[in-house]
Image (cartoon, rainbow, N blue to C red; front, side):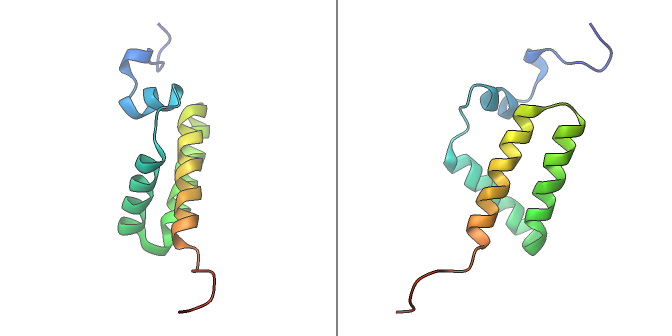
Length: 85
């Protein structure tokens, strides 16, 4: 086995689910909410850092998951639209 490589069985469960496309929108929004709670207005920056980290590690599945989380953060932090009641 190559040094530093991991077999699929050693990968975290969220990565395995991502590979299979099994991470639900609900789980993505839960992760987004956690980042917002921990990082506030910088949550989107933290998600972008994680996207870069996944890219650096050669993990396209993880990158796609973090892109989904980043989009969810942007949606949750977007100003309300429509007319006030």
